[in-house]
Image (cartoon, rainbow, N blue to C red; front, top):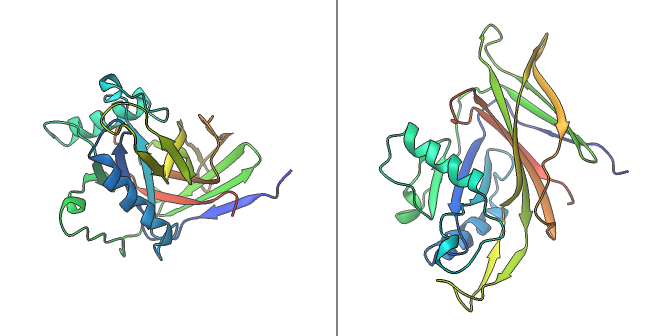
Length: 230
């Protein structure tokens, strides 16, 4: 049995960068490569957590992305509806729940903030994870949801058909498993214990990320993440 892994956010807000991508989309590999560079970002896991959700709505054009899920496509559509966006697209970025189009321009990624978001702590033992969130406002009556994503790094795919035919794609920060679960009010904040999400496959390197949002509002409030095997 491996030793307990403890991951904790600072009190200030940690930025969640979501990429919606697909192996069946010819415009996505540049975004995937750029996201991979964030492995060396000095603020990785400190004030920045990137995650890559593979959507399934390009699977029909000739290549089925094995990392894709209708749940991830639904998540992107729910964002679009809540932000009054006309359409969903790939590659599509969201930074802290808001459309981030800087990737198509200067690619200026700002994660520094003085916004206090409370502390999120994760304790992982084998396949179990215990989460505790202590918001700044201890008198609030919000219902909170915990999102947990298992991330894979160093993944390669040899694409045999579709728009990326005969290309080898490389992926990092790939969501291999994902789940949500309500948090329960305690004397010191909000807590829950659950199993880590099932994953579609293992990867050379693995990490876990988790973030909090209010019920019926996907906007991330606080996030935490870190390596599982480094």
